[in-house]
Every structure is written in C-alpha cells, then in structure tokens.
Image (cartoon, rainbow, N blue to C red; front, side):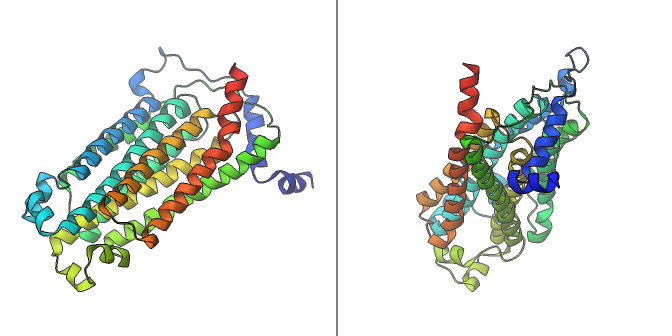
Length: 344
C-alpha cells in the first residue's frame, strides 16, 4: 500500500531514488592508479572515442562548407565537385546540407561521450559505461545499412573499424573510478518540480532523436527522397531517378549515416537522463547543452544557408530545439545553480 501511494504521489522516479538511497550506504569504491593503468580504464577510451568523433565532425563540417565531395566520391561518381556545383547546384546544396547536419550530430555526440567518460564513468556514476556501449553499438550497426543502398564507403568503413577497437577497449576495460557521495533523499521543492518537467522534455527529445534516426535510416535505405526534398531540388520522382544509381547511392549513404548517428545520440542522451538525473549533477546539464548546441547550430545554419526552409521539413527540428531548450531552462537551478551555491 505504501509503495502504491508513493508511486502515485511521488512519481515513477521513486524507484530510482530508493535505489540511490541503498547505494549511498555502500562503501566508497576506489581503484588506485597502481591497480588499474590508464590504458586499461574504460573512461579513457570513452574520452578518446568522443575526441575522435569531434575531430571527424570538424572535418565533415569543413567538407560540407567547401568541396562537399571527397576524392573517392568524385571517382565513384565520375565528376568533380566543381562540375557538380555548376551543372546541378541544387543537388550540390542538398548534399552539403545533409553532410553538415551529419557533422553537427557527430560533434554533439563526441561532446556527449567526452562528458560521459570523464564525469560519468570516471566519476563512477552507475550505468554510464552501459550507456556509452549501447549508443556506440547502435551507431556501428547502422553502418551495414549500405546493403540497402549499395554504396560501400571505404573511408567510412576504415574509420568505423578503427573506432570499433575503442569500443572493444571500453567493453573490456575497468571503470577505475571513485564513486561520488550521493544524497539519501531529494527535497521536493520548486526547483525539483521544475526539473521534473525539464527531465520530461529531455526524455521526449531523446525519444524523438531515436524515432527520427529510425525514419531517416529507413529513407536512406529505400526511397532516399521525400516530397520536401524533391520540392527543394525542383525535380519530380522520375527526374530524381534520372540522376543515376551512383549519385542516388552517395546521397542515400549520407542519409543513412545521419540516421545511424541520430540513433546513437538518442541512446546516449536517454540513458544518462534516466539514470543520472539528480540534484547538483552539473556535468549532465553541460553534456546535453553541448550535444544540442553543435547539432542544432550546424543543421539549422546550413538549412538557412542553402535555402532549404520548407516548413514541413523544419518543424521537427524546431520542436526538438524547443524541447532541448525547455529542458535546459527547467533544470538549470536543480542541476547547476544549487550545486554552485552549495560549493561556495
């Protein structure tokens, strides 16, 4: 009866708070540097994986803002970036917008991994190693979407194989962190109540990322273009097919890659928000702030740059931006301001 009443009046988060109260009674877990070497620690490889994604995102963003096509893309298509830009400017801009959006998501996910590694796993927050592994495996699995569109990107395959070794090191590595002290209870004051709305915004946002990832991945493997895309390209479906199998394959590859990255972002955001959302966890606020800042700045900026502003295409991004900002606003006091005040 008490449990039923507690769930009714205190919400489903009561179960997590009970677990945290038990965890607070456990002794501190500490592994010294002599016991576990740096290269045997999972958090080191998580940070390295995040840094690699940030570097790759910067390179992809630079590519999207300049030549768009890589040399092996040009070889596969049989035309150069300059020729594509002059003969099919709309297609050139369309590919640039896809690649810039992918770059922004890579930058945001890399930022998130760095925070999950340094503050999550290194700080012995429960479940953060699982969150990174689940996110990374989802992202790597999406690589095999190329079976649906037929374009085997050799550079993508090489980078994926290289970074997968980082994920293996994360899986077999030791956490090697010190568990931070945890409060045995959380006062249900105004900041706590506002934070529950913020957490809800973030959970819905993460679910939206996962849904969008599945949708875009499926589009990349099947139809490639939606009606809004054809409107921007000023083409009919038949004219789009006339672009040729190779051109459509490269475009489909970008779309499927974006879908896979969004899936990985959805998992990387959802699990920490569910498992590590508690008073004073400022690192979580900054992790999600960086995740959205890079992704939305690159995506929206490039959409406006190339003129792809169809309202039906922009609505999901605007709704996502609102949920992300709402979560930041509602959780500011609970996660950051009160921690700053207690430390001072």
